[in-house]
Length: 363
Image (cartoon, rainbow, N blue to C red; front, side, top):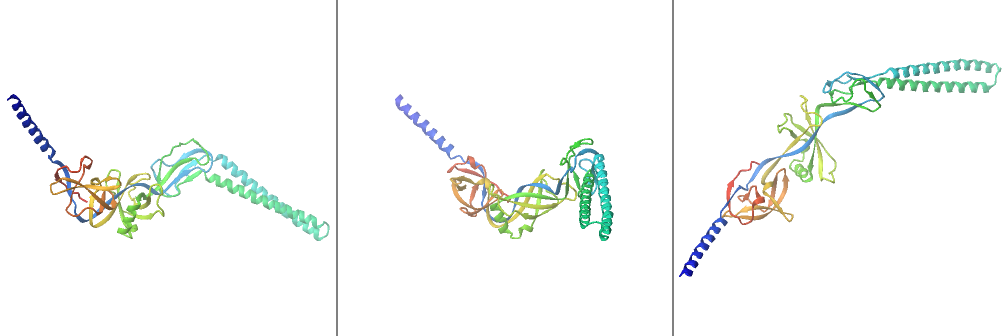
């Protein structure tokens, strides 16, 4: 009798355990789910960009010397031709004076030989001297004239070097850092500062080959389209820009191609070396679009988790047509009305029951 009761109790306990296990197995998992729809939308494509001034020039010395004066401060706005730096010019001024003296001496020497040449011609006419004397004098005159050319060249070179001691702004712009101070000794080619003309700026960004092809197919004349710029703080720049050029070839290493957009900068808010994101907009008409985070890859194929009528998950192979930013435009594998797991797919397995938490992805 005791053995019979023991068996009965064991059977009841096992049955309760199996029932509890079954209930635990079918307990639905709450997951965000979205319904696939076909819609016309505008996609925002953001690309990291580097911002550069239209003109950005290094100001370097062309002669050696000590910095005598600095006429501007770092960050100052300057005009074309405005004085920036002056180097000590005493030594070069002496060189110029010597060059001028050499030039005058060469001219005087040539004048003397010209007078002598006239005398020789007179004597030759009177047959007092031979023609050889005339040839020698003419040769002396040519040598003296050559000395004049050399002296003139040396004078011009000395004056040019003297002018290099006074450095002016090549265009309107903003002065960058000035690493050296007055009294510093500089050699030829020393960097004094950098000047940027940022009344307009360039934004350089790269686009993948697929994005480039889709961009051109959507709008063949899109090279003339206006684009917007997102600043590093996430705010949108108040002025729109325009794509001016596209590189002639794709980068073999990255498979991308570079674009250049130009933005006006009247308030000088944008500075050379800044960063941001260029935003392109693409129309997508009657597109079946799903988020990239809903897609996973198995053996080079793309899948999503689709819910059946009982909200059980099923792996579904999909065929993406193109990828735009954080979304895929789907070519096959899904249809309007399908429900897919929106996110958290890394924790989902096939065949589990889901409690759908419907979300609306605002494309």
